[in-house]
Length: 353
Image (cartoon, rainbow, N blue to C red; front, side, top):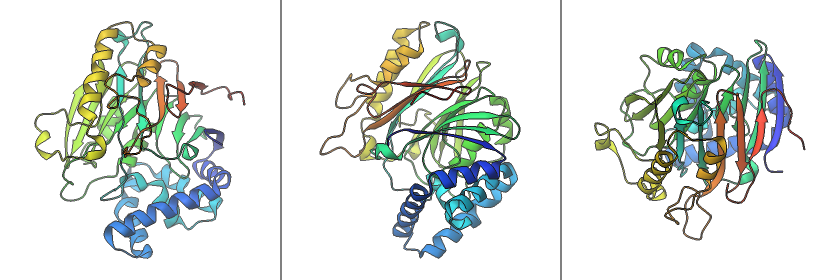
């Protein structure tokens, strides 16, 4: 079934256990795929790969978000996996030398850019991954903090909107690998999910370096930032007073020297210019509906924002999301958004079957 909805609640461990029980087989498959990817890339044994991920990243999670590790422990018990396997699955998006092609087009719109003054964010998901991999989760924890997530089985951080009014977008950037230790991208995502404001996120990540990627982070007060992490360095720009688009191209001139060619996202400059052009045209009249239409845009096809599976395509659009941070709501389309209706999700109601 595509886009299954799950409602989890309780302590982090209880949430993880429910997650593990509900998606046991899918989590086992997700974990196996992650291990195969890293062992192939590094010529490591499974034991060595598992040990690397736990040794490299668990201390950071323990320091910055220990509740996430309790959730991982619950996933392990619920899915009847070892803790190391569950941790590997939960953090697979930041594996070193990650080989999966990944390209997305994202946008963030401040209060002055929208018709009703709401803060709106969203993006396409361009991965080529099977649609059946997507899960939609609503989580209510023991502190009565809630989040809606477009997620994968076994993952502990992904695209979301929270009861605190937090959300983010994520775009892969292809650049030289950072030298020295860097924090995993899922740690940044989890910090965002557990924060009350963009200011809290910026304070929490002070002193950390993250793996390559662009993240736009927003809160319901209208504070929006764009951060490009490239080769261990970062450029942070306040984008609160505008409508801002981003694809998979490094925009900071200082960091572009590190950029690498990546065939799977060769269309990124075209998509980036197109999304910004549409946002500029909409000016201060942006709505949830116009952003949904933006994710379905075929301008400059086949280098369009909404891309379709083709014999020579490495990636294509598999989902789209628009989040209303002010209302704490998400609109999700699984599949090409030009062909799939967006479904409306809130923090309070269970969607109709």
